[in-house]
Length: 389
Image (spheres, rainbow, N blue to C red):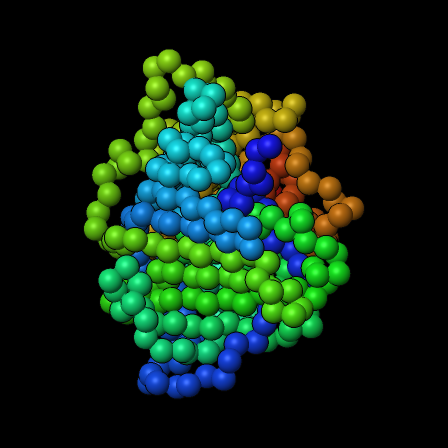
């Protein structure tokens, strides 16, 4: 029988219990756990690129499996991951994933198959930064001294939830060391054990670069028995060493089958003038607040059985994860009954709040949208500059 896979991707652990409270803190350092996490957030915001070998080890009472992969990151959107070792073949050694803002390539060596996914209009979030901010905001952080990780000095931080009884406490874990989400398999654990299960988290911050270099997440039963342990470590970590732009370009093997999915844009433009020459309708020239600059314009001729969509993407050059976009469509893509009614320059509009904050409105025969996942305040200003005439 094929053994149970311990390192499968896709879903985070869900538990009914809470995160375990660590032992009493023995303050041996002038900085607090919170300050080290703040340092890590600042490092993440400032870094240009990152490369490392990532070792992921999953342990249960019955077995231990390890996965080793090379990772390259240029936040927020560009990623490359190559699996070098995988004890349970999920994913198999030789698997490669390359992502940029417009396309993701996934190569599966066992099937000699390449999946090419177009996502020209995907909103990109900086997952590791958000995970660090969540750790800072939702956990009590205790400094637990200096350790050595991969021949580096590293500060150990133990984490316990601010509200152990809260609905979300201990129900999901976003890994800080890397951006892949792993499912922790607990299928063989009884419901009663899961009801009492607790999760303890430990994070190590590299002293030199002030960035997470290791984390360990333990799942234990109510009587303290280890049900599952996931340890993730960066080896040979380099930050801002410089990456060749070709790192995030992928050329499929000559004999591989390539399956293409998603909406391929008709074209991606570097300027509004070039896009306006091809767009089937007039494009707005929004007033976008500093420091945002136009990054690209995408044109999709037909989207989900609707007409053409043109999207103007603006980013902060110093912090590319901060972006907003203006979308122009021939067909509305919003449901007024599900949104809050508001106004843009006296014209009826609709607001959506959540992971992505948006304003929608129609004018003549066109539908407009201004959205951002990182800057709620600017969307109203940008929408007002477009208005409806």
